Every structure is written in C-alpha cells, then in structure tokens.
Image (tube, rainbow, N blue to C red):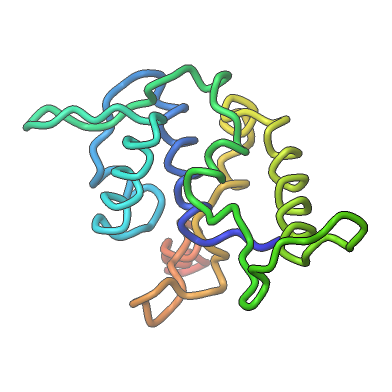
Length: 165
C-alpha cells in the first residue's frame, strides 16, 4: 500500500501540532519547519480542520492547534480522512449471486481496510514521541520541488577552519 504525499504531510502537520502542546501555530511556521509550501499547508490544514483533527483560529494572532488530545487521534482515522478508502474497478458493477466468488473490488476493499485497521492501533501521541529525524520532510539527498541543489546542513554551512586560516 502506498499513501499519498498529502497523507504524509497531514500526519507530519499533526505531529508538529502535537509537539506544540496546545499552542497556536501559524501556517507559515508549519510550512517552514516541514519544508512545504504555505499553499499546500493551507489546503491540508483545511482538510484536517473539516475532519475534526485541528482547530483554526483566524486573525493576526491566530493559527492552528489540535482539536483533540494526541492520544485520541488514531492514525487510521487520519488516513481515512485524507485517502480514498474504497476501491472501484471499472466494469465490475454486477452484484454477485450466492455461491459466486467475491468481486475483485470487494477483496481489495477488505485488504485496504485490514491495512488501515493496523494504523488504527497507533496514535498521534506515539508518533509525536518519535525522534524529529523520523518525520523529516524529504531525504536530504533528494532536492525538494523547486530546489536545484540539496539543502546545506549546519555542518556543511560552516567554513573549514584549519592551521594558518
């Protein structure tokens, strides 16, 4: 099973909010911290707010924060809110009769639900406890969209200091 980038970003946004412990966080800060565009963060925050995971406060001092405790947010629920969770196969609209095998779409729906049920066993609280490196935006070796070269790390940004320099 492969989840979309939107789902990955949504989970990372929720983790960021969980680590803020109830503080309002500006979308610009989330975008900067997770190396995403503000437009993309706004879109995902809107979806997460409509789904009841975030609360948004408008205005100059506004921002977003979790609408529920991290322990009450199951990762499977986040996936259900951000992914298509029903498989439809073209030309398979004929109902099965007793004794016939299940349609392929039903088998795939069952597999998808089994996958998501495993995610239901994990909460946002667990994921927020993971080290920060475990939820980084992209692999440092893969340039982000619009970036022509890899991001410099703190070590790479420091000038070399040697004898006589």
